[in-house]
Amino acid sequence: MASLYDFSVGTYLQVLGGVAGFMDKGLNHLTANKIDLNEVVETRLFPDMLPFRFQIQSVALHSLGAIEALKSGTFRPPSGMEPHDYAALQKLVADTTDALQKLKPEEVNALDGRDVFFEIRGNKLPFTAEGFIQSFSLPNFYFHATTAYDILRLKGVPLGKRDFMGRMRMKT
Image (cartoon, rainbow, N blue to C red; front, top):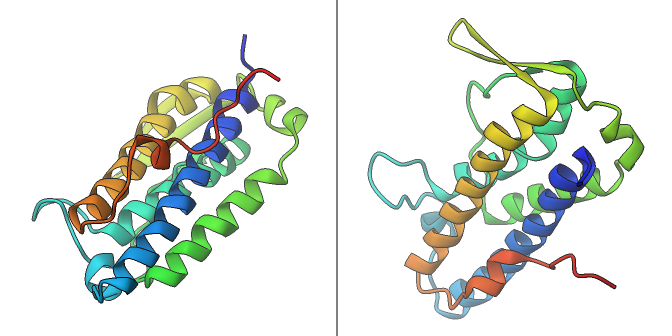
């Protein structure tokens, strides 16, 4: 049976590796084709969806931010997100990856079973640590990573499923 560390941090690191890779590929393609990076950062798949920059910021929020919520016992959505440019978004992904890599399995596994509350608009939704990760954090994390990938595909970046998946954790 997988530990809390394995199904949270292990999964976050795998997909963040994919996000970093498809953002690098995106930068190369967009630059080579003289596509405005600032316009890409503000691209939405549909008018009522949030832009690429929000998607990448949310990948960080629903990975490292989720682990921080397990520690504090509370997860709150941010009141606003900064208007990062493409380079700042790449740095955010790298910084998030670096912080997650520094976490020790025993440190994260010690949070198993703890109470975590998702607070939004005066409501407090109760979770256990593992319930929060499995039913809230991971679905949001995948949703935002997929949406960012899809925006780059919309802009013509030649990506495939392998670019999204990151480095798989195969038996050695």
